[in-house]
Image (cartoon, rainbow, N blue to C red):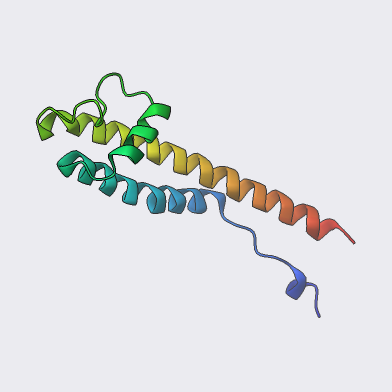
Length: 107
């Protein structure tokens, strides 16, 4: 086995983080819109909003109001989800690359 065959592939941190952002944020954005429209998944949204402050613009707190009043909550929650998944992707890919480097240097 040659030296090149023994090497593991490292992750591109930027692209992995962007992919994690997209893959994680799109389903949550759909859930936020769906919840704002008909109340589906309200408990999950309530848990999400209990961790992320929305300054009175939350979907959960404005369920009795018109749909238009829940749009800022959808946007704020989606922004929080995007930030969370980007940071998660960044942390995972950086840790993966660090561990791959450490294990490749071992005899």
